[in-house]
Amino acid sequence: MNNTQSSLPHGFIPVMLTPFLDSGEIDYPGLAQLTEFYLESGSAGLFANCLSSEMYELTEAERLNVTKQVVDQVAGRVPVVATGTFGGLMLQQADFIKRIYDTGVQAVIATTCQIAYPEDSDAVFLDHLHQLMNLTDNIPLGLYECPVPYKRLITSQLLANILPTGRIIYHKDTSLDAEEVAKRLAVAEGYQFGLYDAYMVNAVSSLKAGAAGLSCIQGNYVPELIVWLCENFDKADRQADVNRVQQWLVDSMDLLHTAYPTAAKYALQKRGLPITLYTRRAIDPLTPAVQQQLDALLETADQLQDEIGIERVS
Image 1 (spheres, rainbow, N blue to C red):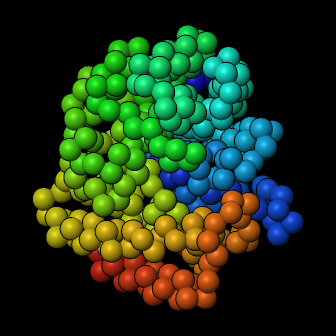
Image 2: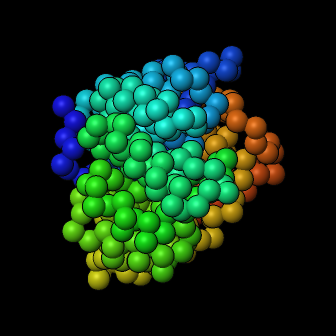
Image 3: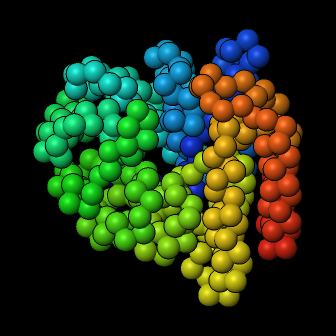
C-alpha cells in the first residue's frame, strides 16, 4: 500500500527512457532490462512516464502499461513516481491521476504546464491545483516544471502556499536558478518534501543547499556519475573530485541535450543494453558528427570514473 506520510529518498531519481522496437511499438523486454540497469546503477527511485519517456507520444494505455510494468518489476526496491496530468478539465486530469496511482506508484507527478494556460495568473494556477488536490483524495503528488508545451515555474511564494496541504512530496526543479532553489528549500523546511534538481550546472550548489537529490537527463548517459555526486557532494575529503564531476557536467551540458533522447539510447546501446535508437518524438537527427562527439565525451566520463574509483555497471 502506498504511504502518504513518507517523502522520497535522497539521491538520484532518473527520468526513465522508453525503449521502442524498430516497428515503433514499445519494447517491454528492453524496458525491463533498462529498469534493472537504473537500479544497479544505484538509483534511489525511478520517474516513469516522464518527458524523457516520450510521455506525450504514448497512448493513455501505454502510459499506464509502462508505469505498471516498472512498479511491478521494482517490487518495492525503490519508490516509483509517474506523470498523471495531460491536459483537459481538472476532473479529467484527476481521473487519470487516480488511474496511474492505482498502478502502485508512490506519488503522481503533476506537470505545472498542464494545470493552467501560459496566459493564466499564478492565482488561477493555484486555484486549479487546489481543485486537482480536492478531486484526488489523499494521493501523494509531485510537481514537475516540464518545459513542454511551455514552462511554468513554481516560485518559492507559490510553494509556500502549496506545501501546507501536506500533499506535495516531490518537486522536479527546472528553474536553472541557484538562488531560487535555495529560496524554495527554505520555505520547504519542515515538510515531507524533496526537491530534485534537473539542471546539472547547479548540481552541487543545489545539493549543498539541501536538495534531496538530482533528477536529470545526464543520468541516462552516466548514471553512476550522478549517483556518486549525490553520495559524495558534502564529503570534505572528496571536494576536488566533486569539483571535477561538476565541471564535467557543465562542459557536457549542450552535447548531452543534442538529439535527445535518441543520443541517450545510443549511449546506452554502446554500453550493451539491447535497445534500438527508435524515438517517437520529432527531434534533430543523431548525425555521425554528433555520434563522434558523444563517443569522445563518454570516453572522458569513463576516464573520470576510473580516476575517482567509480565502478561502472556492466
